[in-house]
Every structure is written in structure tokens, then in C-alpha cells.
Length: 389
Image 1 (cartoon, rainbow, N blue to C red):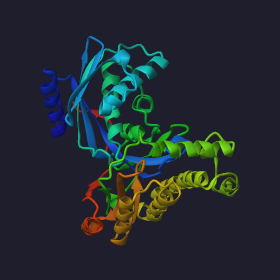
Image 2 (spheres, rainbow, N blue to C red):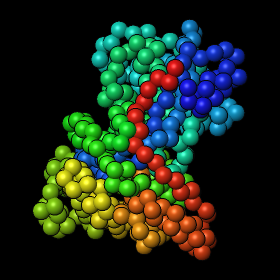
Image 3 (cartoon, helix red, strand yellow):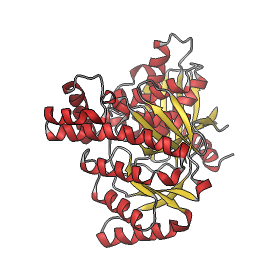
């Protein structure tokens, strides 16, 4: 049994005074490429990582949900029927929100189930605020547990929708469905190529280890919050751009449409649109190259993605730019910021023999710039949400 899973069960017993029914886990994710394309019905290519969130859960008979965690002394308690958006919930909005959303979707599908109350205790080694979807890992671990215990019979794609719905309605973050899809559908050594319009998902072999590569995460320690206004304003600009071009979403635009778009839009709206349209093409090209020529051929696409996020979507910060440029200077095949932006992490696809040089150079550069010391670590593609025991 995984040590952290065992620790989670013990934490549940300490907090609630009895043993949980079981422990479920779900991974964080890193997005290899395809940023801010998901809510524009475009393409994304994340993979689940070998950092996980664990949820120990047991049902109650009284309709009350209690959630606790290793990272807070507070136990949040609410009636299942009273779950609503409430800023005082803080982190608890994620597990409570997904519980509300699992019920909502099961009801929409006319599933025959009984949603009783529950106790839940959470542990995690997914870094918070690094753009590695610690929030989606919580949602997916809890939704997988409740789906089994309530016997709602939701598919993994439906559970991904539940995670997104809970985050949109209860947390108040206007996120897409990518993070939950990666956390639920991930497979070892594979990425999840997701069409966010049809929700069709295809697992694509990454082949990093076979090519002598590892993916480094550079957590800049600049924490970001997707409920802040920067994310919402980007999404609104994308919706404005689609309306101006008279299309359902930016997915419907090609690069050949950009000249006409530029003539009709403000500079800011056009840049937001250009990022999404070109990023969709970069995702498709990345998948094609992985299948045809292998992972060493995708580096230029990763850096082009970073430049687009830095210059057109304006979601990078100095620390992310420094991490990317330093990694490339010292031997990374490709590098880019990852996640929603305004902080968080960069990624660097790095030959194994250059990992030490890249890592030490980033530490030195950050120190010279007066930035906080980053956390640099390698991740590999892992399996999705599961019951541990």
C-alpha cells in the first residue's frame, strides 16, 4: 500500500474517530501543450503526473458532508442539500463542489442512486499553486470515491464534467475540462489528447524515457489563483472574438482567418484570439510529431507556445520567462510555461544527461535575479484516478 494512502487513512481516523471505508487517489497533471484552448472547444494535450491527492472517505446516514485535510486544522461541515458557492469554504469548495456536481449530473441522467452524507479526509503531494492542478486532483479523487460509494454509475468522462461543473459553480473559477480529463483518463507513459468540443480522448505514447528525456517541472513559487480576474478577462476576450467573427467558438477559426480578424478587433482581443488559434494548431502538430518523429522533435512547438502565451495572451511572469530561457540555454529540448498563468510552473523537456546542469543553472539564475528559490523536479506520466484500498 502506498505510504501516503496509509497516512491518509490514519489521518481520517484521527480526525473523525473511526476508520474510512476506503482511500481513493487522483493525480495532478501537467499540460505538455494547449493552454487556454479548452474552454474555446479546442485541443489540449496534458498528462497525469506521478504526484497524487488521496481522499479517505466513508458515508454518513444524516445527509451531512464533513471534509478535512492535512493542510488545514478546520473541518468544514455542511448539509449536502445546502452546498452552494461560499468564499469562506476556501479549499473545501473543491471536494464539496464536486459532491454537489456528481449529484447534479446523476440527477440529470436519471440515475437510481442514494446520495447520503459523507466524511472525507485529504492528503496530497501535488504542489499547490504551481499550475499542476492540485484542485482537479482533489475533485477527481473525491468524485471517484463518491461515484463508487453512492453507486451513481458515472463514466470517467461524466466525472470529468462533474469536476468542471463543481469548479465553475461552487468554486467560482471559469475553468475548462482539461484538468479533470487528464486526472481521470491518464495512463503511464501516455498523454491525453483531448478534443474539448466532442470530449473524445485519445491516449498518445510520449516515449520520453525511450528517447533519454525527462520532463522537469520548475515551480517558480509564484502562486496563482484562477478565481482572480486575469483568467476571467482572457476568457471574456475569447468569447468576444468568437462573437465578432460570428462563430460558435474560436475552435472554428483557422490561421487563414486571422488577417480578417485583426481588421475587426481591438489589438488586445485580436492577440487573445491569435494565441488560441495558433495554439490549437501547435497541439495537433505536437501529437503528429510524437507519433511520427518522436519527442525530441517537439521542442520548437513548446517554445512557440510559450512565446504566444507571453506576448499574445499576456499570462506569463518574469520568473516563468527566466525559467524557460535558462532551461533552453543549458540544454533543454523545449520549454514553456504551463497551466493557467500569472505564476505557477514552467516545464522543460530535458535530456537526462543535462538535468543537473539545467537544474543548477535555474537555481543560480533565480538567485541572481533575487527571486524565491524554485522547486525543480522531474515527473513522469502516471495512471489516472483509482481506488487505493
